[in-house]
Length: 282
Image (tube, rainbow, N blue to C red; front, side):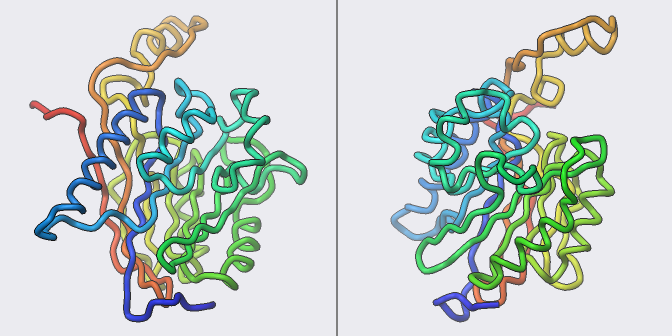
């Protein structure tokens, strides 16, 4: 693998879980703006702003899909890469711009010819980060093997940079854990998305890959994985058709901060992040 231009340095990658509608976008903006303010303190006591910010945005347009306006809104506050999943194509307007956004990803294991791309390379301050986006198959769509597709892409991007993050958008915890071990030592991080519930199993695997089964979500905290309770009750309790709406109330931004050796690409630390947009009470 190639080395970065800066020796003896580490960098941080902030990964934010599924952004859900306007509440999710607003809490992400509030969180990132706060980080930016802290990093610009005159006395230098604030922690530096992350070198790279990656967010899963497949739910950012009222819970289903993503718009160009959503991308621009999040880019303006510091998001560098926008990953996706099974809801990426929920809004037909995406077909008008997905090929024009090099850092907007959809799962790489969709069939050949699907619009968009499944990986990207972003460079800032002399550092290069590769992001690979794949989707699981257990309880999901019958796509190509996420393991083999991810492995092939990792082999390709590792010729350019050792700093590689994989977003595995999957339902089954076992599938996500298996991917972590499968790519251990080959990538900097494997981060699970899709379930909207942050897991407490963040760790550094034996060969230097940071892992978490699910980063959680950025969205309402009083709903059911971001959706209003009433519509969910109608479908789950009464077993009647129901249109899901975004939940009201407070929101939180969930994700992980990963520290990576800039030369080797090995992860040095992983920390769970959970930021509330208002104080929490018991």
